[in-house]
Image (cartoon, rainbow, N blue to C red; front, side, top):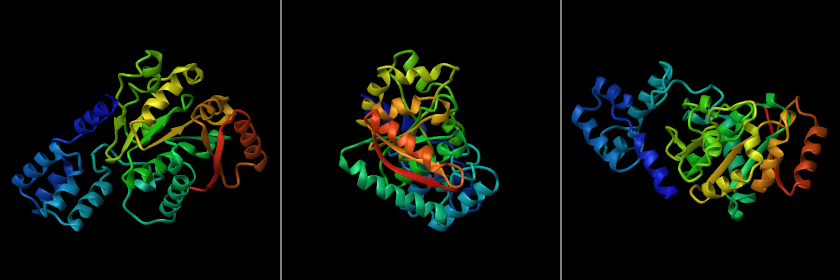
Length: 290
């Protein structure tokens, strides 16, 4: 049932009038009949507009790339929902040192955690200024780009931001699901990226974080893990409370995120000891400088 709901969510996000198609018509690369044919195939299979156009040999890779670059220059992403943050480097088809770093990290986490039967992983930082949420957003995109169905859960109920990063409405998210005990009746938000979904925070209150310490959250994680290949969990920093420690213990594994010239070794060491004391395995520590 959960898998079918997720697929319905993906299908409902197929654009009826893709801006990339309008651009290619304007440039004389496609006809309106071509776009109609592409849309027909897009409704029966969830692929991006550009992928279908290329597979049908109606447009070249250069045509699609030019349209994407045009949208980016004019402040629109491929789904027309506004520009991504500049720090979301994996959303742009360019080769950078940061992109290589995320791909390398994907390989390491796959070998050391996900290939061993684990499907969910929590990310813990010592300070809210480290930039963990953007880091996880990039990593989630990287897993999705390897064609693994990936879910990013915004469990940072003190300062949620994934809905802003991916230009999604803040409503109907984790808080709403758990406060109404609707674990079996929800649909994660499908992003424009084919293999990436986001479970938003929902509308938070000053006490929303208390929901994470109840028995519902482990049940939710278990249900989600059965429907996705990869589940990454964005958590509040340790300087704001113990939320992250509780969730990491429930998930079973965590990655510690630190920042160059900001996080002290003693802070990482203390966080690692606390996680191990609660029974969570520390899969690794990441030092970022983005």
